[in-house]
Image (cartoon, rainbow, N blue to C red; front, side):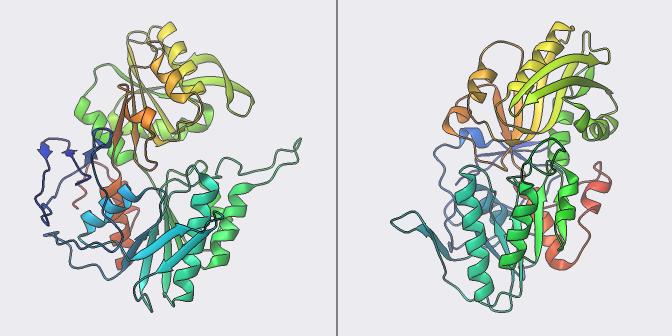
Length: 378
């Protein structure tokens, strides 16, 4: 079973279900250490599952592509349902081929597919799966995109002739028949405005906050890595009842950043850098170095999307600026990241499962985040 260990805010539960057994679980926040599950085997599309899940049998279907099947399998487990039967493969020339292998006529369908690397392949898989479902007469199709790729180009600077790729992807999703988008921690909230269909942009903060509360670091200081992340950092600092600092930086070109100075007194504090993603980790490592130079006791990074491209793992591993990097499983970890002792992965599967359940029932999604001291029962 792909799910090796669940850690809630108060209790650690070893999950080793027998064949065909799925445990009943109801807890506040769930964190799955995916890093140590290398021997796991994800649930295959169309596989049979039986569950004592407290929710009634879902009145919708759940499909997945090849981007993050382990996350989709975990979502299905928490919903107490099988993944939909679909064959998603490649022709000999590399083109995507999709066949939906069950009846979806007049059904409410959710497709779980992050558009992470290989970005173009995963995006095309999602588009072609949606087209196949639409042509098979699915009534409503929700694209569940935990990590929304192509989001970093969301505007055109006056001095550059560049595309707005976030808008391009929005147009493509709508063109093939997506009825609704469910995503997590968009790089820029305004991307929701590129769509003419409903977009639910949920947050990983309940999972990240739960882990921070469990760790209970003393002298905690939440740090925003740039001015753009101030709103996120301020909200989390308020929830944790701690102070906030801001790192002022200048980015001369893409994937290269120069940390300038820190706004706030961090001497002797345990600093937590909050961000939506880690790409090459250049910004993150330089920020951690500056914090340590200014007297920070420990530096932890809590980020939603673990892209980890290029020299990211090498940068995180070398030196002692970063004490730990905590990420979620919106993107599966590559082999180097799985073996990096400084990286720990939490699961957003239960949170996505609860959100899907609420969308299907026509219930409020944002109430999940209106009071994060209240439990989320799954």
